[in-house]
Amino acid sequence: MHLSLSQHLKKFFYYNKCSVCNKTLDDSELYICKECQKLFKEQSSLKFFKDVYYIFDYDQNFKSLIKNYKFYNRKYLGFFISQLVDKNLKKIILENDIDIIIPVPLNKKRLLSRGFNQVSFILDILNIEYSKIVRVKNTKHMSLLLDKNMRKHNISKAFYIPIDINKKNILIIDDIITTGSTIKEIIKELKISGTPKSITIFTFSMAHSYKKSF
Image (tube, helix red, strand yellow):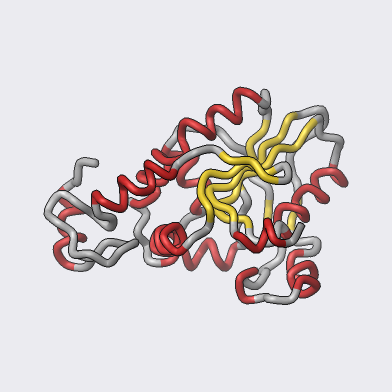
């Protein structure tokens, strides 16, 4: 990945450690070292569990990568993540004859503070068209809610579907699936607002807690 002048300046003044292993980066690296890049590329493979496609297990390495991308304003990592999911995501779209792609939205407050939607940004990089649904409720971070019922209440009636989804093959995309509460609520609202032909789910990573819940 070629670094621009502004990226070199960012690296020089602020970011000289790998987002994953914390190793000091060399002059050609930004945010993530070559060794960690290689590790992710080797582990990048399409998996399937309980109707959900995913690429990575939500282990410590991926947790560090996505945390730095989402919360530390290291959007450049989105270009690396897009490389990791590109081939398999396009395969899912083709094989499932997808008509509408829906990235899980952020609420207005979180979008304003973060500055971007981590899923939409990657779709933009890959030139994949998508439709937006609206998060009408300022929900708490699901990772902070350990109780299953609290998660369910937190996400209840959080989404509005402003698009025609009748007789369409829909793909919902998120970065992490932990309990599945968010995805389940979106599916519920989709089925209330219309009659989709099919609903497919794809996430960059899947937490062990999701598998354990079955």
